[in-house]
Amino acid sequence: MTTKRSIKNKVEKTMKIAPSILSADFSKLGEEIRAVEDSADLIHVDVMDGHFVPNITLGPCVLASLKSRLPMDVHLMIESPEKFIDEFAKAGADYITIHAEVCNNLKACINQIKEAGCKAGVSIKPATPVSDIIDILPYLDLILVMTVEPGFGGQELIPAALEKIQMLRKHIDTNNLKTLIEADGGINEKTARIVAEAGVDIAVAGSAVYNKQDYKQAILALKNHN
Image 1 (cartoon, rainbow, N blue to C red):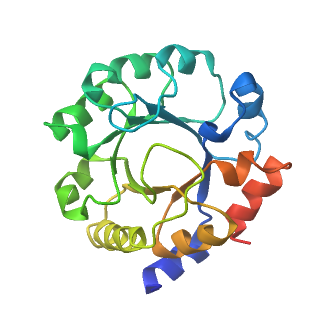
Image 2: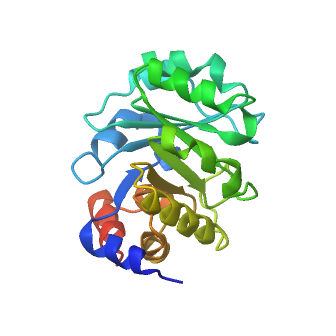
């Protein structure tokens, strides 16, 4: 269901796109990042530890080798993120997003991210209710709604996640918060329109960008919801 706010959001601003390098060619990550810089808004870096999610990707050393003029949007899908926040900040992260499900003291982790000089984000899995993180929204720069089960690219968007996005949009607007809403998972030319209308500010897109021959046109199609 499209709210009045979501229609206004769609008219006033273009949803930003953060290509996920999870779907890029890992043999030439530097080239893959440079290839999207002119049309994308952020570079999304998925960090997986094989424990919180059933996959392993990259660590701070690899991030430090990746250079971009766009902000590095680092999503820590890992257990005990407090042990690694400072390392990822030193490696070049601009945004660091941690999962609500793994932090015993979420506020302390948020403060740690900000003290490290990064913008702070929190992510919730599809089964995690908005009520679990509603109280910390004023302290966040970013709330990331997983619209698929985290761990692998190429999944289809879970429709129930749209209700969470709408709830967050309403709460953020009603309380005049500056927290950005990001959606990650199953974003393509069709679902980009749906999440934009629900109130998303930033959409993470992996295969919808890096599986296409023309990255720029793929990103523009997502932004224009074509």
